Length: 133
Image (cartoon, rainbow, N blue to C red):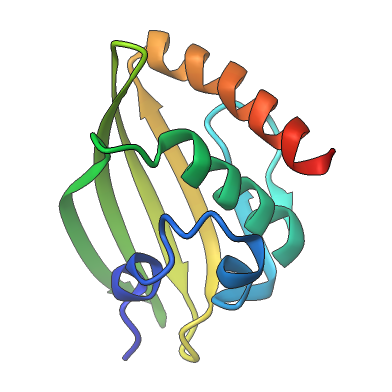
């Protein structure tokens, strides 16, 4: 049975949308802590995850906890992470579900505290804009 955590760890900080897209289902759903509607599709999910790698992936970034579950045929993992950007401590979780073929079908990110989420909103917006330029 595929392990979503192992699948994600192989490309987590690659920062390359094509590398990330290779592990995503075509209809993958991405839920951001700051975007109000789920983003649907491999391309947009890969773009967001690559931008997150650029924004969060510094020397302080680390996954510090991991939980797994199998429910109703879905395989899921929750990965807790932490980092520091511009002196702001960031704590969050990646909630990842994959199908029986090992492709990620759902990726939800939650971040705390509010100060960190507000800063990430700004920095992710800047990163996504620079990636499109």
